[in-house]
Amino acid sequence: WNDRNHRWDDIRLAGLRDVAPGTIFDKILSGDIPATVVKEDERILAFKDVNPLAPAHILIIPKDRNGLTNLREGTEEHVDILGRLMV
Image (cartoon, rainbow, N blue to C red):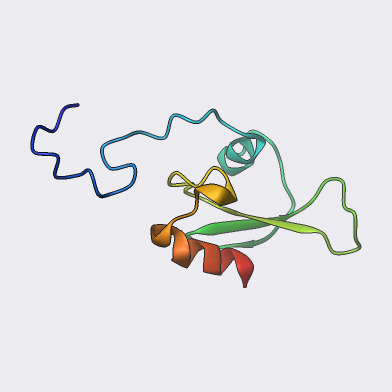
């Protein structure tokens, strides 16, 4: 893919595919690994940790990682999903 006008240069990850390797969370989302789901909506999945370190140990992940493979990859475009994960 080649954009000679460079119109997408200012938009992070525009025109690029997410090529990060799949994770255990991707397998949970696809149903390949079972999980005890405690909350789910169109954007997030919350489930019990299989090795809890507290009586209530819940993991919350975005359904579409949209380049957010690590918290340090977060940008302004991730504000909404990060807010959902924190509430």
